[in-house]
Amino acid sequence: MGEEEEEAALRVCRSKSLYRYNGMNLLKETSSFEAEFAEFLGVPYVVAVTSGTAALHTALSALRVGPGCEVIVPAYMWVAVIAAVVNLGAIPVLADIDETFCLDPTDVERKITPRTVGMIAVHMSGAQADIVRLSELAQRRGIFLLEDCAQCVGGAINGRRVGTFGDMAIFSFQMNKNMSSGEAGAVVTSNEVLYRRSVASHDVGYSRSSTDELLMDDHESYGWGRGGRLDELRASILRVQLRRLPGTIARMHHSKYRIRQWIETHPGVSSRRVVDPSGDTGCFLITIFPDAETAHAVNDRLRVLGITSVSAETSNVILEDYGMHIYYNIPALVRKVGTDNRGSPWTLAENQDSNYSYTKGACPQADNLFERSQLLAIPSCLTGSDEDEIIEGFKEAMNSVFPLRYA
Ligand SMILES: Cc1ncc(COP(=O)(O)O)c(C=O)c1O
Image 1 (cartoon, rainbow, N blue to C red):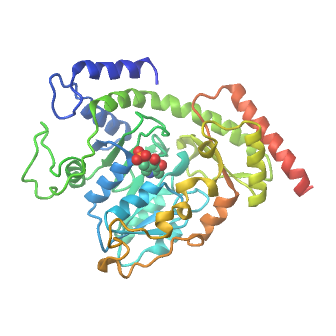
Image 2 (cartoon, protein in one colour):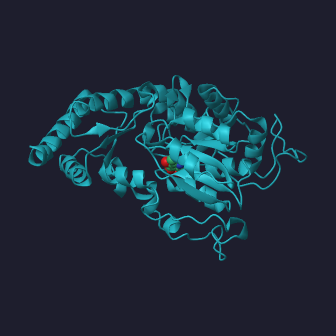
Image 3 (tube, rainbow, N blue to C red):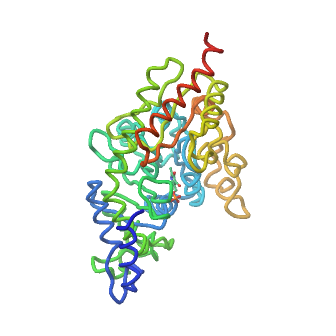
């Protein structure tokens, strides 16, 4: 956050017009942000919303997900992904991850049943899912692909931005993300009907004309709104943050790959597989150790050396301890807690054939990776000497752990 964001926020406050659809001196920051983000991604349609969670609900509503539907979700995600499926009355079906730490296409194929309507591929921890294979799979099996790009804003594969491979995509601009206005999100699509349905769903249930009038007779889209419109204040900040994004990503990418280069020379540790390193946003480094004991020992030592940021729990952690990013750490999922007194969606008649377990063991490849992999946040403000300190920290931690065990 710098002077440009301050000026943007002041500009909107002084206009006294904070609501996107009308005002005394409306600056149209929200629609400008939508147009600029659409151009950045290379898609025709963007709907700005209040959060990534709102974006997930909006997109799944546009895709008409409801009771009787199964939606495949990865074992490594954020709880909001599953919450959106459950809140709509559908059943989440866990699929395993591979060394991309994103959906394993082979396991997705195994999890498809006659009730599967789609999958949510989450580009986790800054880097891409194997989205080309997942997109081919979705098309071949006739199911939708929703990309969750919350943690990979600005990522790409061979120059094509993540968020442009699926039927729809969602983004989050919450505080931890590559660009931020504290809270906000976006829904993205190239499909005009899905766009109109997203406009309707995120607002009051009706799409809008090019001059923002509610369209009461757009029968393909109208329904029930969720009240997730973005305000002018946050949109004005996002416009500045979007201009900063390439620089933010370049700095994180540089720092990450400098550290990764050292790691690759050490036989006791490997790095997560990145589908296209040049399009990795660089905000997290995931390292994989031979076993849980080694992973925890290295992590403990790095923390003692101060290789963390605020908070340590989200900046330098063994994945199994990474809260509700891990399916078995979500109590309401493991215990199938319902959204109402009837226990919906788990107890709905439409879902009676969709009976799955969400306890540890449901995704064995993920379970194995979670206990021996470490996630390290890479801030965009690291100096060369900060990077040196992290590399030295790794060296010291690895050398203190490995000779004893691998002499
Ligand atoms: C993968 C993923 N999806 C969705 C969300 C939800 O976004 P928000 O916090 O903006 O609701 C987040 C982050 O918080 C996330 O990491």
